[in-house]
Length: 362
Image (cartoon, rainbow, N blue to C red; front, side, top):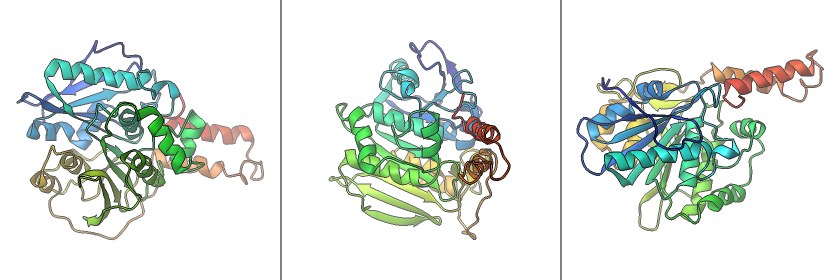
């Protein structure tokens, strides 16, 4: 792993979202260096997510900078970005503005190429990455959403929990309208890379489909992909624009639960195993960087190594997933009516505990 440390930046702006800011600069910082913004998931921080995803390691090898916004417990007890709070997901407000200010500060201070700024994140970080792509589309050349959700479909804790479970979702036209309403007047739209596990019980895979439908509207492309392929046993679909450029891709990772898909069997893997960093035989970090033009085929090969497919496995829910699964079981109508001897207060406590564990309740 890269031994160089992340540097904390302060006084980067008004910071209305009260976020922290960490930066990684490669040893050789060339003029017009690209920038990747990386948003951690719930219960994580900048350093732990970098340790698992390996973004700074790849940045050192390929010569781009990495910005790590970081949540604080004063904002969210489980360190989730507040992708479901209206005050944090509007242009020039809350956490979204804090991240925008960080980017502006780094671009000016370090001569970053403002035409090659990208953003990615996991879970709540993936949902917040989508917030940034939606509210500041002119700022980003591309984004990658891992285990995330569509933009603007939840307002408050209750709706957020429903959307994570794929319940009561808005129609495709409503999701597209949410995006076009906030983004239509701000210029060209970024490319979007979507990653999701087939066995994700924390954020159901239907959310990946919804993200694709949402962005297909502003890119004015059909629902039918132009390319369908299998990579290391996983499914990939690609949509092209009128010029033949890849503008949307979705990678559905077979057998994966909630987390970042990585490959640790390679001779030179990116990142290290950890919570929500999962062995899948495919390196999302390397492939996302290649999708953005920041890495090449050789980098992907180094990060993945030889792949040997195995039997599909169903991963039993653990950690946050187990809590949410338990809450969903208790929340079934048949159980919410004292029929099983549980009072409403007890049911409510289980659900509230699950919401806190998922970072949806402060």
